[in-house]
Image (cartoon, rainbow over all chains, first blue to last red; front, side):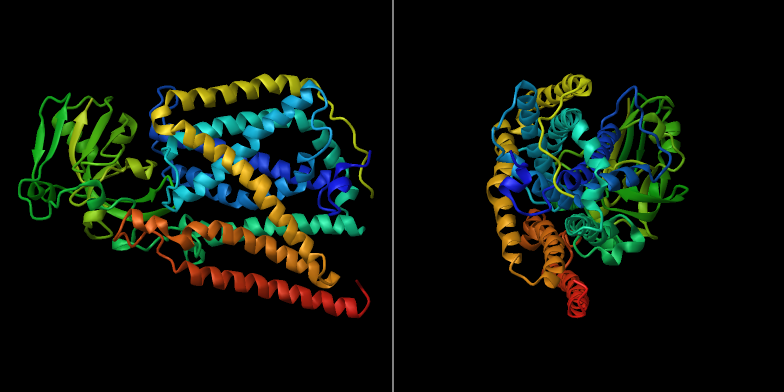
Amino acid sequence: MPPAGRLSFSSRIHHERVSTLLGIALGIAFTVCFGTGLLSHAAQTPIPWFPWPARPVWLYRLTQGLHVFTGLATIPLLLGKLWAVYPHLWRWPPLRGAAHAVERAALVPLVGGALFLLVTGVTEIDYWYPYRFFFKTAHFWAAWITFGALVIHVGATATATASGLRDRHATAPTTREGLDRRRFLFAVAAAGGAVALTTVGSAVTPLRRLAVLAPRVPGVGPQGLPVNHQARDVGVPDVRADPGYRLRVRGRVTRPVELSLHDLRGRPFREVELPISCVEGWSYSARWRGIRLRDLLDEAGADPRSDVIVRSLQTRGPYAGARIDAAHARHPDTLLALDVNSAPLHLDHGYPLRLIAPNNPGVLQTKWVTEVEAL
Amino acid sequence: MSHPPSRAPRYGRLFWTLLPVGGLLIAWGVLGLLRQAASTALANWLAWFLGGLLAHDLLLAPALFAVGLATRRLPTALRLPVRAALIVSGTLVLLSVPLLLGYGRATQPGNTSLLPGNYPLNLTIVLTAVWILAGAWALHRLARSRRGHL
């Protein structure tokens, strides 16, 4: 029987070595995305045996940037790989024994999952929701299924991978076929590079002018900072002229604290430079000025080991409050900020008061703070 | 080199070791989907999961095949630069679809930091750059083929 590559397609691209090299790159990329995705969940949902650290401050910025931009650059790799192996889909006979049947069955969650993760990831960062499921849970569980299928696929193709790697002649520049295959791989890599170059500036500030195909651009937004949710979208009453606004520190404390805006402004300020690192991959640093959360908790007599819940004035949306563990709450750089870049917070950045903590995912940097509860 | 002879894949110890590991990970994912059925909207989730697969295998891949076939008519010197430029620009266009449609803006009217770019213009500029590079490459190859190097 002639090899499937020749049987169905005359293109010289459909070769084992091409699909091996793309497969290895994809395996690495999906492992990076899976690992950083799990880290992002660990950062958002406290896990007792895996406390998310407050240092280094750039850690979440790095891991979530890796997650999103590796995922984006993977799009051409996945399409190139599927293109290289496509003839196998129509190979005859379709099944050769039980093990082959298992291998082929695992391709459904592998390919379906990989496409699902990339499509939902791209639409999510672009704020387009053409589906009915909640992105976070749907993407998370799809990742487990896809990664499981990848593990099976690695086991099934290890032999072919080894022989594909040994077959250096297949991409040697001395033959016409080899040259074509090298150029195909080069073109796929160039496409991944083009995607990275036109988007990664939304996290890597020096490259921000190149972020022409990114849904967020650092420096664009009120006070030069992108806004994830506006005050009016999550039902925040306009407190700009409200003398009744209070910050309350309560819960398991010995001396509950209640402060008006005037009281807050009269306290000693601390200034820190910290990034907002969004779960959607963009991140941008700013200078924040405000009151140390630690000082307020001490003043109220809270237990230094206790976690806290920071609550917002917002009446809608899943992030009206965030549980902050003791390590973050007690960190000297964790502030309830009143100013950003030397001016009072814009209403959409959380006026009058927002949480800013080191190495804390953007969605947990609660805006419009009105209550801190010690647990 | 010619293609290596086709042979039945061999399933060694590694396959049978990794199979239960991968199977457990898949089962964990399915269990999670079921346990959080309220937010994962199972029927819709499955439609997107299998829909992507079918859309690729039955629509996108044949379409790419047709494009690849069409470029075979090009002179040898032009074929590679054109194909490379098609791969790069096709990826960028695909990635830009949600930006060009701009539905994200409607989810938060007034949020000027959301999809702030002029994406039709930006994409045009990027694609122009890609095709200028491809054109320069093609000219170089044409010149070489005239001298008999191709």
